[in-house]
Length: 225
Image (cartoon, rainbow, N blue to C red):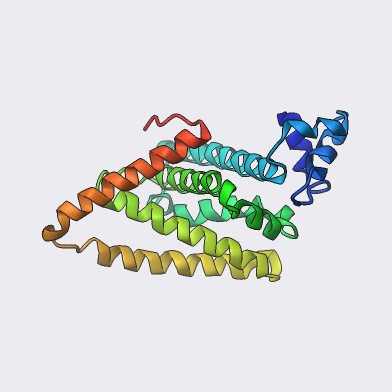
């Protein structure tokens, strides 16, 4: 099945639509009969999910390798959390660029009610991996705040990129940098919360933790941190 989805997700083949043509073309590209599309009852959503999951795994591999390099030879820049997060988000978004013309259709498809749980799980897992490899090991409410804020930054930057026609999408990366700076300022304000709010923060923390664990369970990923 993965070979078929790999074939269907090539830039020369991928045309997001809510029918079986995606997997039919993918099957034919790897010399399988087109009728095998019956293995994918969710149609285009299966392909979008597979592509998203594959890109997340690729980013995870890149971030893990960078983390090992930083551990051996740390520099001043690699110690800046915001810069690492920015670079990770840019790296991930660049994986979408070859599919930019059809990506709005993919987003619309994954926004349909039956596909929302999987779409949200992919997003939460993505931002968790980015924060983790950027060095966020906090165990307080800040852990969840950063991830929720980053999820918003990722999606808004993704939408901005779809409208950006600048060279190498430079306006998008500038937009991303501004959003991260804004988020850093907001985070500073949030961390000044008084001790009077701790019970509420603890409850929110538990709820957020459950959300991220659920996201990984939906995707069949083990929580090993």
